[in-house]
Amino acid sequence: MMGVYSLTADRCRQMLEAGVDRETIAKTLNCSRANVAYHAGQLGLTNRRKTTRWDEIQADLDNGLSKTEVAKKHKMSRNAIYQAITRGSITARRTIMNVSDADAAGETLAEVLNDHGVEVSVELATDVVKDWSSR
Image: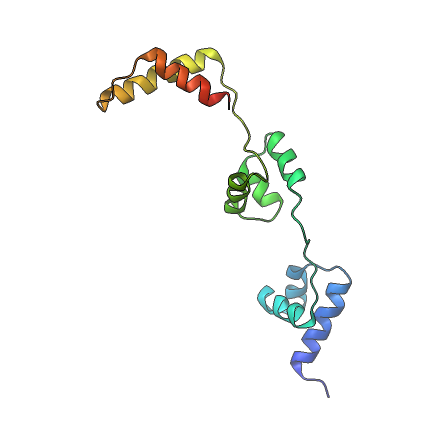
């Protein structure tokens, strides 16, 4: 007679081989996703994608989705997105600033820095903003 573990493991194996996702397996078998992952690991099975599709993620960022939206769409954490940007797997969406916005931002930057005792001209602060926004 099979024990409960064997039945759960066997059902997990069958469902994983059929391509059922872990969340659905957990709901169907009335157990946690961690339990499903444990059984899958014990069986040497996985239904997870082996590689992250950074090209798809980059396309989503380029098409205007926020990092939060991209993370949710691809079922990953925002931190994973930030780490990928840091290591160069993807690039952050660039914000293009028009000249009048850069002039206003330069004035604001100069004002804030001057208020904190850092002597900066509006022209220099504007150049810094323009340089930063063009990267």
